[in-house]
Image (tube, rainbow, N blue to C red; front, side, top):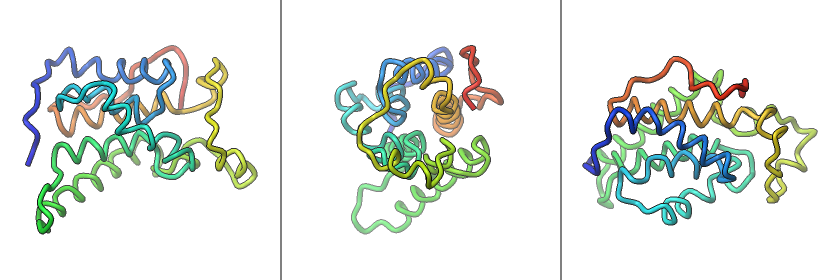
Length: 180
């Protein structure tokens, strides 16, 4: 059953992408940045939202698997369509269909992938970097070389369209750098 939560104005929807990007620039991971931008919709306080989404950053615990933006979209899908009954195959199916649809939409923006290491252009040569749990230092160069800001914007656009009736942007907000 869909969470009826707090209604959001078009201005709030427009700014969710900006809020998510600002979250990321403050140092939150990709999953936290996206999830936090929408948490108030479900009456979730910031601290709880950040804890719920913390482990999904860097492709889940920095293992470079499923992109944290995609994970945040799946978390939101759970609040919107998640089944709460243990024996509810129809409810589970509806939720899984929504998550698969979100992944399909995300792939349209990314050229076909939802995998962090692929989106970052990491190869087997960088396997040591991929498996290290130590997050990269956030510098100006970090933000310039990674597509994360654009992926965050894309995820927010998809969430707005799919769950809040917002119009999906053809192009994410421009912050002055090409993050793709």
